[in-house]
Length: 131
Image 1 (cartoon, rainbow, N blue to C red):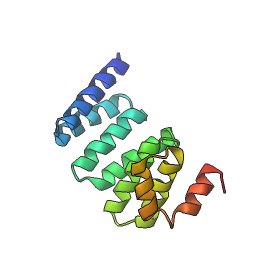
Image 2 (cartoon, one colour):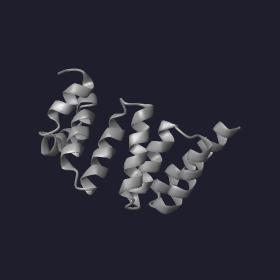
Image 3 (cartoon, helix red, strand yellow):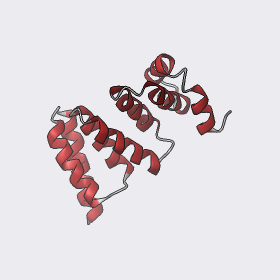
Image 4 (cartoon, rainbow, N blue to C red):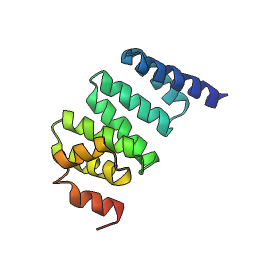
């Protein structure tokens, strides 16, 4: 039953995010997180909602937690990089953009990795075990 409640709250939160109502999305997603703590999809959505509300430290925390659950989550790395940029931590952001791009070479990730990733290139290779 708790799984169903968390899923319904997640769906509601995602719908609210899509509708451009991130403050209400945060409410639904925080409730989902309390029902299913440590669920990567909820943490990622909650991070997006916090980011949309300008709550960058809270968003950063959610994306870090999501990466603890699934270290290979390229989108969480990318979003964490965005949070870090908002907090003026460009080198650390670059490392996460580079990781996201190495995991899934998309144009968006490539652009951010190229712009901010030079200092983080060694970190990306080390984390991915390629260097």
